[in-house]
Length: 276
Image (tube, rainbow, N blue to C red; front, side, top):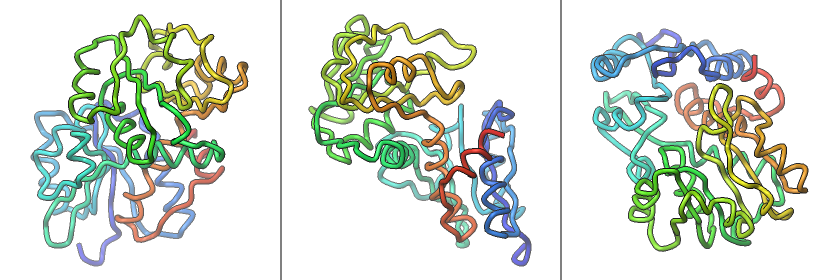
């Protein structure tokens, strides 16, 4: 396979909803790269066998999505510090020496999305409020701490999951009961919804939003719909509102660069391609 076109892809189940093939396909065409990016519906029971097989049939790496982000760490030979801290990987690189390298670029994608679409964002200017305490929240919390947010107020419908984040990430993380979520918005200079609430087909995010500060940067990891209720209200209140699609775009950049040798640009055309 040394002379064959490199193959990458995304593994998960279900996988038909993934925007990644549209995005990576756009970049492959844009940069004239003879390569392929393929969606792979892989069950949990087959995960280890499939990961072991892919490098032998020409794959240079894969993205990993729900529900495999945590379990893929079991099959990696090398795991980055940030993937270890988050407890999940979204990017696997199949090295030429046969080793599997696992990384998590979700936090990178989250921060780069804010930097691109809220250029006046100052993470050190005040506390962040994070709604939710799942896998996505772990990546967001790690990245916010890394860029200097002084304090993170985290709230989740199941408090014990939020407590686990405080335990893992330290004293700059404070836990607040879900019933008080609306009260802490007035403290947030950065407000992030990491839950699936507000997503198409899911219940709405029923948190009182009247406490949002007009100086706040508000972002929702949900990108279907692009303008969630949270973002609509934030815009109406004068906040800087950033949708979640940019995080998907930016988190894809490091993997594409490692697999295909070109660092792709996140621009309007890439955004349009992801929405096809």
